[in-house]
Image 1 (cartoon, rainbow, N blue to C red):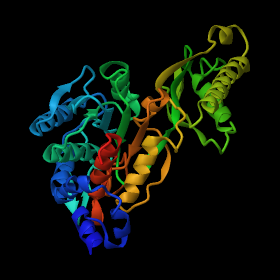
Image 2: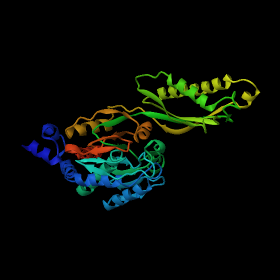
Image 3: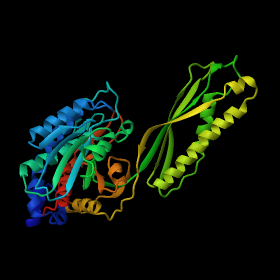
Image 4: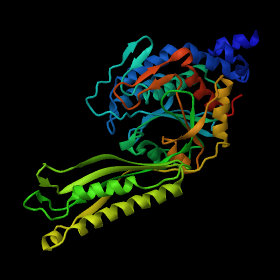
Length: 414
């Protein structure tokens, strides 16, 4: 009977009651409050989602996030030089510094309709899961800590950061670890999206815009000179033939191609955006070198294809511009922060699976700082699409409970 009462207090399914006894008694009131406040958390998710936050234009959402931190009574609420929003519970100062963060930005351009539509418990809107769920969970955890107001030694910093999505190139967490919180963070936890799994390993990525350039000309009158679009095609074909290992998982993709002015013009430039990813820094470097060799070979082949003085004067060049580098780094699944996350999930009645992905945690992991990214509970599909949706399900509050329990455990609370 005691276990069943605990299950109801935490909002756990009865079938998972045996796990619930692992939650320390001192933390049960905070977790119970998160369950009771579930509607509040969902309201944060919906109302924040309806504030646009395109890449590099997160200011409006960030300002509202700052106001919500202030309304909770947190200390040192501020917006840093790149737009991250920070707030703190300082503790006694004798414990570790723990950061709980969610990224504010979305992938959607200005003008996207971000109105949340609700039907039969399903919330539909661009960004509703990725990452309005994450930033709502961070707020919910901060509120629960403020309401419970426990004594703790750890310094807990709550963050809504900018620049997680592709174009942002992790600029928010880069600023945190290189400037704002440099040398101060002991544990970093990002909350990103929905579900109940944990990212413990960083998938690094190299992203380039490759542009072949030449003088161009009329397709008939200037025929016989190197063509940037043809060189681009050669490069894509060579890249597509690259062989990569299955383990560590390594991938490549040409995601965007552009160039040309008309069907009867030899283009003056042709460009492609290339993405490469791997869990292994060494493997990623090797793939990068192969892609660069393919690009050079394509350039050489297109220039060699045409002869004569006019072709010589119209030789192509190529530029490779970096549009995003996400570092990778080794972190064992036996690391304390990973084990704490897994055990906290089990204590709440579910079994998190640890895996690899590309998230805000990449940066601290690459620096040797213990870091993970966790899901925010509930269920979602269609991330990065206009039809993205989120469902809270029978126990969506498990996401905020999980984040709160991880922070409390790392803070040394029992």
